[in-house]
Length: 296
Image 1: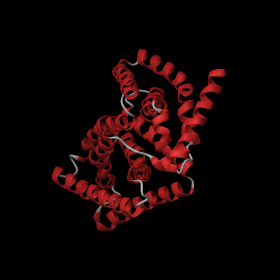
Image 2: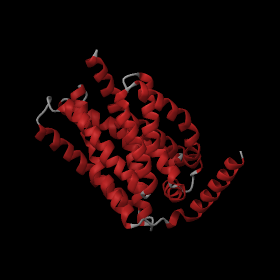
Image 3: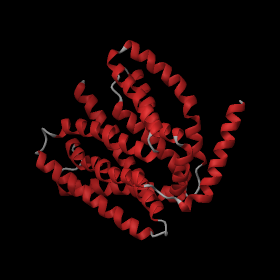
């Protein structure tokens, strides 16, 4: 109990420091390079959503494609509006949704229980693990995204170890029963070590660009390669990617708060949050249901 009180007091101190310094956020070269990788390598993996929609029958023809893009952008705009209204809650929900989405991408369990355990473990480490390992460095970044409303995000990071105790135990049990899970257990252990050592934005970029994007692209390519030519798929993805970059640059120039690093963080991460919601609905909802029906 005493350790929890001390931890909470330390967290409160970090939050106060973050709220006082959120307008002074400065990013080093490694963090800026990591953000560049997120934009150049990680972001384009969502540009294949148009091809996925056509594969599922939602974006065929100009009328269907226009309707899909309109709905997609409408959901993204709603997320941005909610973030402006309730930034602290929006950040907390974004972290939680990101953990679920990342976990789905890493899950390989043969049973529903083992898959859920993997989702919680891998997604939790990739999101809340980074926050916990580097809470003092991450909290000012959270503050820059929310105007200082970091209480929920910090609380989620501090409660993460308690939530992981039963998850870790279940994961070990599932690993004993399912040999196929053991390589992922080793991967998770190595990921924890890596994320605890490297700076938070660098760790996020490594996971997002290498592990998550790599697995997502492999999974999506298996679905799309028989439905359209690679040139058509890549051309469409390139178009959506460039449009996203152009939109991000315009918003970044429009913000002009006087703190370039803060504006950059807001454009990238609030933009990711806005795109994550429709992306999850499409990939983790519709596409996975389609996969399940085909497997039956």
